[in-house]
Amino acid sequence: LTYLREACLLLEDLCRLCQKKILFVNYLREACLLLEDLCRLCQNKILFVNYLREACLLLEDLCRLCQYKILLVNYLREACLLLEDLCRLCQYKILFVNYLREACLLLEDLCRLCQYKILFVNYLREACLLLEDLCRLCQYKILIVNYLREACLLLEDLCRLCQYKILIVNYLREACLLLEDLCRLCQNKILFVNYLREACLLLEDLCRLCQYKILLVNYLREACLLLEDLCRLCQYKILFVNYLREACLLLEDLCRLCQYKILFVNYLREACLLLEDSCRLCQYKILFVNYLREACLLLEDSCRLCQYKILLVNYLREACLLLEDLCRLCQYKILLVNYLREACLLLEDLCRLCQYKILLVNYLREACLLLEDLCRLCQYKILLVNYLPEACLLLEDLCRLCQYKILFVNYLREACLLLEDLCRLCQNKILLVNYLREACLLLEDLCRLCQNKILFVNYLREACLLLEDLCRLCQYKILFVNYLREACLLLEDLCRLCQYKILFVNYLREACLLLEDLCRLCQNKILLVNYLREACLLLEDLCRLCQNKILFVNYLREACLLLEDLCRLCQYKILFVNYLREACLLLEDLCRLCQNKILFVNYLREACLLLEDLCRLCQNKILHVNALFADL
Image (cartoon, rainbow, N blue to C red):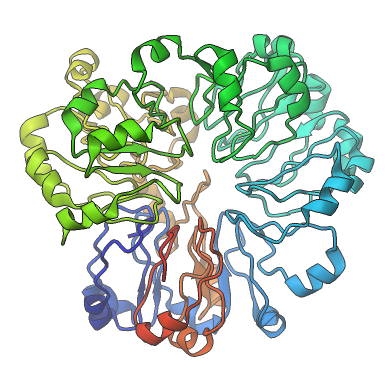
């Protein structure tokens, strides 16, 4: 069970059945795959399951050829990287493979040559960045740092060539885009490439039309947004694009105050934020940058000056929420902002009812949680704060009550929820744990209670929204819950209305896009909806064409990669599943060799797990560590 510290995986039974098999379960419904049949068929094969339904990829041909090679499949086309030379050279080096083509960064040579260069290690804090020299050189340069606190790109050479250009390298193959040609064509343009293959978008036509405009491409197919209308309206405005199609928020007021100062780019620490000028101009504004601890949030001064105004920029459309009423009402309440529009949940009733409930604050470091009042009320309660090491969890009291219970905590170190008390209180309620399809959901009781209702649970533990009113109004409408397959969607009514249409839902609650025109063009094509398993895909035509092929669906629209040639070449290679550094590959050899080696675990600070104890205990067992803060 990925994203859980231990999740109480019984490895003994798994090992007895599968022996040396590996079961990858990442973002999939089936949290409990029957390994008996799998073991009988696969044997020394590796089961890759990453954002795909087909929970069982037969890698027979793959295993025959590769032999100890490593196959990297992480948001990249090239499904097979031959790391023979890597093994010979690296040895005690560190292999950085995180959303980048270069599957192997030799740190020794890098250190000798680079000196003032920077080693980028996505999702890792450290990386031994020389900030002193960086500060002396950079000055007015641009610092691109994805998911990293420090880390600073030296753009001296880049600046000399491009001048006012910005190189955004976020989840891209090439860590170093040649902007020479880009500069000659675009001139004062900006190239944004995020989660896209084409590491180099030709902005010729765009530049001719837009001039000085900004092209944001983030989780959007159209790598080339027609900014004609945008250019006419926006001019020197700032374009906010955060997992949304509507890619153009007019920030007139912001522009008047800031004057070319602040550029918001999600997943970026600062992205060339001129804080000095912004502070002088903005004054009463608060800069919220998701996934950042510090982000230069002056809360004290901001509270005094702002007068209850808060700017929330966290996967939310409304880039500027006016929290005047919130401040007046909430007082000691807690503001939950988690992929939800209603950026302000009044927890008055929650506090009165909850008692032993859990307050989750996902993706927020502080969120201004008043722990004093919380502690006084909660006592034996648990405060979960996603992406927070501390979270002040009272584990002693928890242990006394919980005993043999299981604590589901997404992205948290502790992870030990006692469900006894929860079950006694909730009875027929359902506790949905993010990134888990079933999680022991009592669907029978749900059906009896909800009937045609929909249970929304998006990154929230409790979150039991009764959609009675919604049903009365919407009737045959469907409200999609992101990251949930089932969500009790009434597909029958959908079919009657939409027919062969496809409903796109990507990080949006409502989002009911009628794709009539799309259907007319596509016909038998396949439309993939990001983070959605089924989405009414016409698999008949797919089956006729692909047959024994493997369908890769990983943040890509095309979604149908023919792996015939791959199978013929690869053999015996190891396929990396997204968000896993190595995932304890070939544990037999690993146990013998690893000892002082380094195990990389995505989303972990301590990027250096000693596997000595692990090797001694594991033997032929498999330990899945993905996005965990587990202390091994």
